[in-house]
Length: 326
Image 1 (cartoon, rainbow, N blue to C red):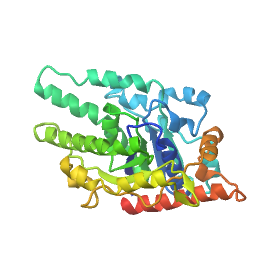
Image 2 (cartoon, helix red, strand yellow):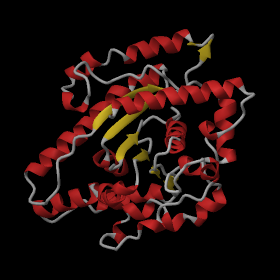
Image 3 (cartoon, rainbow, N blue to C red):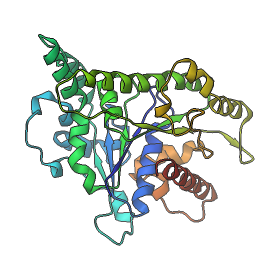
Image 4 (tube, rainbow, N blue to C red):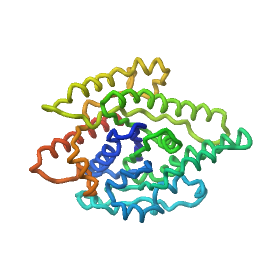
């Protein structure tokens, strides 16, 4: 099986994107899949969900910064020097095969400086050089991932909360894009803008490719769906204000059609799919998990009914995601 690459993205921060990525990755690994997480966010929150600050600093030379540093273009890459899997979670996974682990390519705080360097590399003295630089820079991540896809079943990309070259690399490298949204007014308002941005990237890339002599393939990522996160629950139902915003998300199709969003981006003709299941808010569990180095789905406490509910939520979310990307 060749890995399916899933970008998890929202340009608005604080929507539970990294928590979702960490737990989906851990749960996939617990279900006997080979999983690679790539932390593309310069805040390194995904990395710090599995390792502490001291170890993260030691891993700087094998962080994703090197993927995007043009200084290393053409350098023969030893992928084993990037992929890291020596963290607590893997000791808790009772897999039949030693190959079924969760692996990580960590981020680094230096990643925040890379985007400006990449932008400078896009310039050229003529149209052919500009085109060459465009594809060279925007395919850095895709080219890096390509030899790794036979070694994993799933590759999850935790994207930065902004529109930059690294985000574009993630969308171009992806087979699917998952959008986590906190169901409040401002977060829901931005979803259409994010989808339009993704659609523009795909259209511009493929249009640019038509006039290029360089050998690159067209891209066609699909939107796996929108999933609500940080949902406040009362009596096992979302609170009224959030339920109203979740209902808004079911009716994005007409607005997106007015913006001429390509229907090829969606699995269904009526617009983006909204997950039936959602990630409930639980500050106690989710805030504590990074300090233990083990996401919530990997923790064991059978006497804690709240933990079991949250873990069951993630099981249902994962089942729904796998159904959308099969």
